[in-house]
Amino acid sequence: MEFLKQLGVKDKNFGCSTGQEWLKRTDEGLLDIVSPADGKHIASVYQCSEEDYEKTIVKASEAFKIWRKTPAPQRGEIVRQIGLRLREYKDPLGRLVSYEMGKSLQEGWGEVQEMIDICDFAVGQSRQLYGFTMQSERPNHRMYDQYHPLGIVGIVTAFNFPVAVWAWNAMIAAVCGDVNVWKPSSKVPLTAVAIQNIVAEVLKENDLPEGIFNLVIGRGRTVGERMLNDKRVSLVSITGSTAVGRHANEVIARRFGKIICELGGNNAIIITPDADLKMAIPAIVFGAVGTAGQRCTTTRRLIIHESVFDKVKESLVKAYKSLKIGTPLDTDNHVGPLIDKGAVKMFTDAIEEVKKEGGTLVYGGDVLEGPGYESGCYVVPAIMEVENSYPIVQEETFAPILYLIKYSGDVQEAIDIQNDVVQGLSSAIFTNNLREAETFLSAWGSDCGIANVNIGTSGAEIGGAFGGEKETGGGRESGSDAWKLYMRRQTNTINYGTELPLAQGIKFEI
Ligand code: UN1
Image (cartoon, rainbow, N blue to C red; front, side):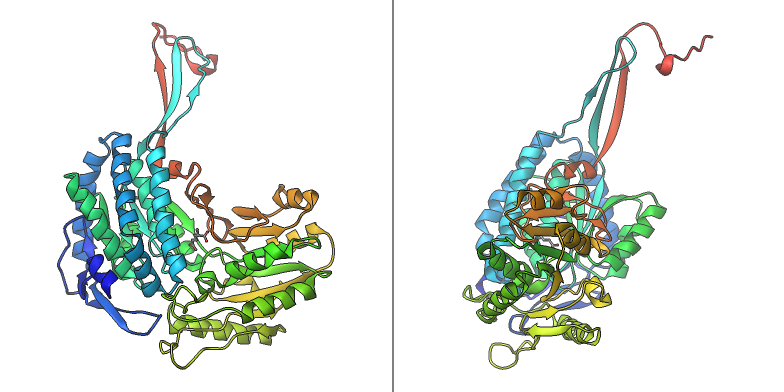
């Protein structure tokens, strides 16, 4: 595979790096990475040991002392160069994302574009780490707040966005003056090796020390748990399941560490009576089957008005029948494989469970076999008719199953159904009715972190803050003012007079 060579991904890679240096221990054993696209072995990685982790944190702590003194716009300049380098590697990197993770090549390239976009955003942000100036109640006093770097930021990413979510965190953290330690998913470590190589080129050209961008590929209990319990790690940004996030929150709360959680979603689109179906159908299909239903923002539920229910159902079945399922590296295909056979089992088990709970299978649900499907990870995306109250519908099943739910009243009824789940990541409505759209966006509308009108639930731009409410964890990453979470705020009051008046008019004379 040419792209592996271009990215410096070898057969036996080391799994721990502090920048240009790779720690060369082998005692934790190899992770063998098999592509879900064709079931073939791609390469392997030695997992990081406890000793490697310790060395990395020590290097990172040392590097922080230098990085925090580097002016923010100069930190931005390094991020600018990383963005330029990512542009050069966009093609091979997109191919590796696609081959290792299984998402379509279009989406693989899109993911690298998302990294480039966040680099550009972070460069601008590096000159805009603004605090407020406040009016003091005391004469000859000045008050303002300022933002200082936090320290070491741990970044734990999931298999479904192997590189973009790292970039959202790492690039913003870098301009904020933090150093970062990245623990990628053990299902997709090769893309992380490739990124570390790309970043290392930029670090070398700029004579930067080791320890600013660190990588620790390894087991949850060796590196993940350590990071959560490690007081030297000021912030952990974690993308994963609600179960993982709940545990991480508990551990971090005990040591008063900071955490950003981006956990499960159970995202819905509401289809109102006058929705423009020409727009809605492609948005639903991309939202439901893009990344084979393995995005946090995947459209899982459709809440359809009864007056258009049958029409929407028929149009969806027609659209699903036209989907090309096959190797993600062929840009003619719409849907690639699931990440592994475990995910396939989850998909088929969930379909059986829905049936048990009273739902009906409208389309799909098969596991594909035969030429081109040797990996055993390809499935036909499913459409099912259900009730929102089924326990299985209340859960996030990380697979391409689209639930159709009927509503008959006004838009508030649809919104209430939408909100009646424990997750709160992304949501959307298709309507041409201003009252419905504004109700959906109002305080009694969608309770999610992301609420869209006339676009789908997935494919958010990096400029907005990304994250969700309730069991999605409450964190925000990427754009808007999410950068503030990567810094510590300090309120400063300066007295430039000759008296010492106390606030609130308190008299204290000695
Ligand atoms: C995720 O699935 O964890 O909005 C991130 C989207 C992408 C990011 C998804 N920009 O679908």
